Length: 388
Image 1 (cartoon, rainbow, N blue to C red):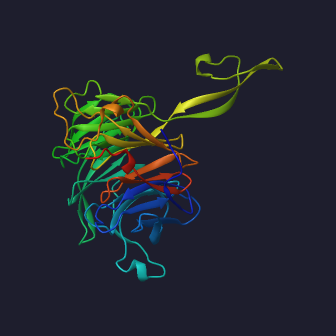
Image 2: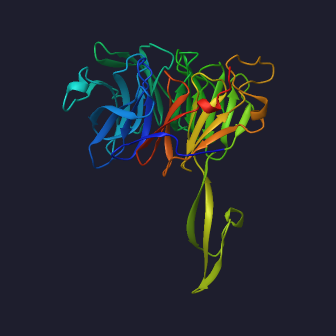
Image 3: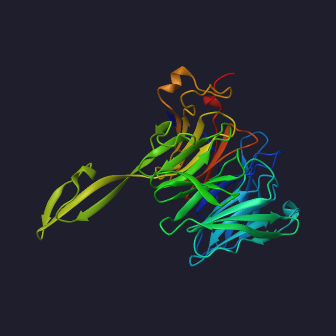
């Protein structure tokens, strides 16, 4: 199915790729997003959905140093969030606090609570445990996984433990198991690694190449969804890692190239023509590329998930999260007519690649998405929820 332009939009001043639900704000449906400008002063926007659900309102606009490559809202304090940022030459990571009277100040300044300054090299992400108050943080760079002890009242963060991924692995991201505060998954080029934070040792792995993003099912234990370049979406039962429970298509986009060469791998061409010019064979062709950048599991509805990628589209899926022998979940919204086609809807309100996805915890039928050109779109999935 194709969705029209039904979403509620908001435009950032600069390019962006990070958005986060403000889970700790129980009074409003709120999101945080940050910009990615190399030359201009970057911004963090605090957005709230109006009470009538018809408008996205900017409740706070804050200056932020450097490009924002990762942003996460603290799950137990709505004024605290984390960012990973880059000056173009180096990376940094910090925990920030929004000033208490930000709505009454002309130029409110973010307060840096703590700098996560133990990293050397490129930092990929900061993880908050999603299931409530926790005094630990995880940060991941290309070679190491750090466990931090965070004390917001003392404005301090200390490295509690650190472990290297090994010489043959470069880490690219991670996800913290919402059902087990001692378990975290990390992505690298050729696998997904599972770590026990008590021992800081790897416990298992999924040998699966080029996973760009992943998310745990918050309603059901042992379920992980991965998004990979060449393989689309895979749903895994972590008790049975040999094969996924289900596979879903990824996001594919077309691009145009001209190749000056005497031979081309012909199976990759969908349209071509030949001409001879100075004895050089010229191909003009359209190629396609798989780039699924983000996946996010619903915080409330079993099997409901979102994916996004470089095709300027967000897909809403109804996946199977039950392996053989499992009892059906009471929160399942699956119906017999939908099992044949797991794609419930495609949202196409975008003109650029979509990198950011965030479900609302307060209103779990609402999600926000962010495209690279700085466009935030909020949508409702209520039309696709079965009547109870």
